[in-house]
Image (cartoon, rainbow, N blue to C red; front, side):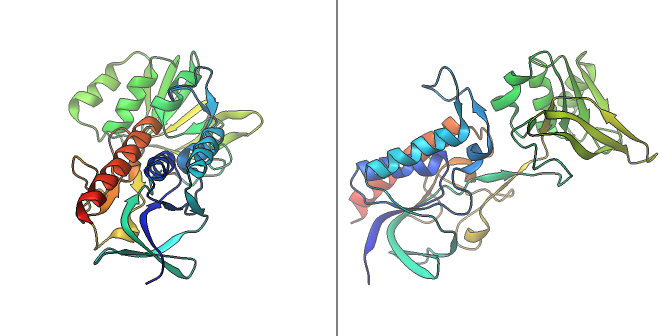
Length: 309
């Protein structure tokens, strides 16, 4: 068998680059596959103000570039390719990308998750310019402004309530005539003086340009067909995330939402295969927690390799 790596890392977001840095510093010769989205979700984010060590904030793409430089500095080999197949049935594990198969004694999966989008005109163009899916990350940018939250479940209610700390008004847009959220979460929203609900409504279009930022949303009432424009500067999607785990179906244990299940040491259901970041975290989904679990995955892999070999 050709060269067998100690560690192969899948994914080039906060978790992946951190895992690679720690693995490289431990002299594990990591090979990292970036996939199609170099930099993960932060590569599509503008200002990041809550990552420790950057009191003035930092652009998402710049933070990702710095993490990449750090991982490469310690010897991480990077392949800008998408992994098309994996085989975790025997060691060394097999990873196929670009028509070639690579082997690793351990694998760290950091393929992340993707916020669900509506697919309406203007949404992609204005992503990071008023359109976002993370209230915790971006809420503070909208102090004293009017914004909207799309969704009707617990997550949407939680985000809307959180955003009232900053926004002057939050409009929840929901396609039904009652919220799907738990009673206590719905009660908080319906009784909050800063929150208004646009019932039976869907977003038809996000208005504005990357230069101007979001200027409003076009709403349609699904019962009456009436269309109106609502002037807002912030648009928060809260309709869920989809973990990037399709490649691992049938080989690794997933929860009912498709996220990888890991133990206290970031190990998946297959010994030697670890996971960090949003691919196994459907609770926090922050850059710092992704980096933390990426770090833990690499440290756990190093310990496991020393005991397994």
